[in-house]
Length: 181
Image 1 (cartoon, rainbow, N blue to C red):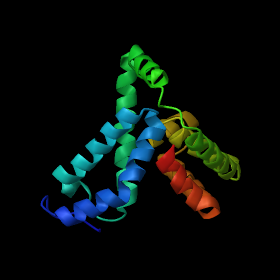
Image 2: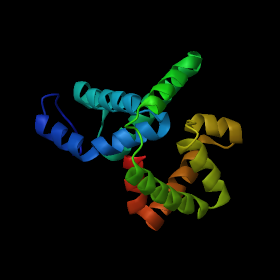
Image 3: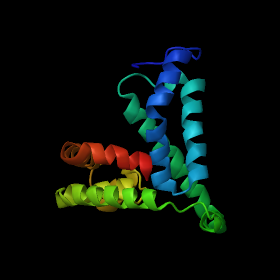
Image 4: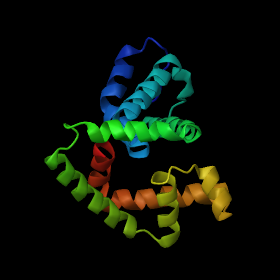
């Protein structure tokens, strides 16, 4: 789908939802570490695409959805910082759930996580630190540029180059890891 031209373009929207729902949820969960909040963010992302299709101006829908998901997740994390006990209560609820642990899922997640760690380790130090800051610490590109005293364009270029290198090295595992973790 290059573009959702109209709000009533149900077929394109449905196809996009089916194709990208796991990716959107995975990105949100990876940042938020909470299933309910990740579902809420995923719903908000697709509602935005449905209600305001003009916000996607064409190009790479996967990248657009990932960016919007990341932005919504970061906004939610910032709200949690202003309410310090909100995350604590959510974490307590998750730990108290007896159905939360699944050995098979845990083993698969650990194996995929190991492959991701190896992929990250293969990056040049300059790329590695930026990728870690952007995707594992939840920092925005602007925040990274300020902290590292690098131009914003350099930060974005190095992150993009690092991600491309990781995808070439271990693309399948990375895509699967994002949807599982």
